[in-house]
Amino acid sequence: MDNNREQTLKKLIEKQEIAWNQGNAKLFSEDFDLEGTFTNIRGETYFGHTVFEIVHERIFNTFFKGSQAKMEIIRLHFPGNQVAIADLDVHLTNFPALPPNINPPAPNVIHTHLLEVFVLKENAWKMVVYHNVDVKFT
Image (tube, rainbow, N blue to C red; front, side, top):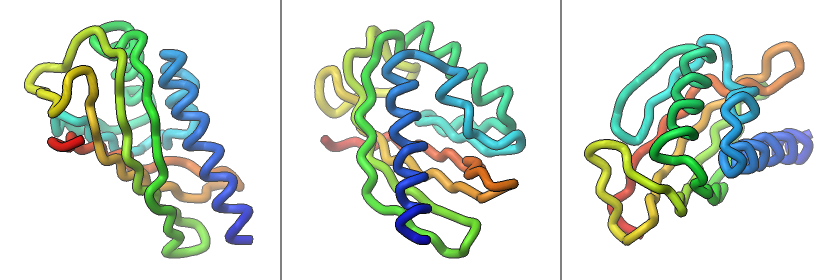
């Protein structure tokens, strides 16, 4: 059963990477919980699915338009049958501009550490926490 849960979550994260690289905020937000918590790389915190999708629609059409994300799973942890924690390293390239106050450590690359918490609700994994931290080394 653990292998099935792990494979399901890997597919959800792969879907996020594909959606980001397509600039598709609707698909990127699809598994975000209605009441989820989102903290971006600038430390701004938002609540709820609608805001998560709106913010990503905005960034996919502005400073991260055409950007490419590579999401590497560092660890998947299941502290309970209905909870999963994913630690990810994310490398973002091909962005035309930067959000205010973000200074990448290398030209044309933003490196973040992303923490995602998923909860199994009604037989579907929903992301309840998306916490992204800007990393100052490559």
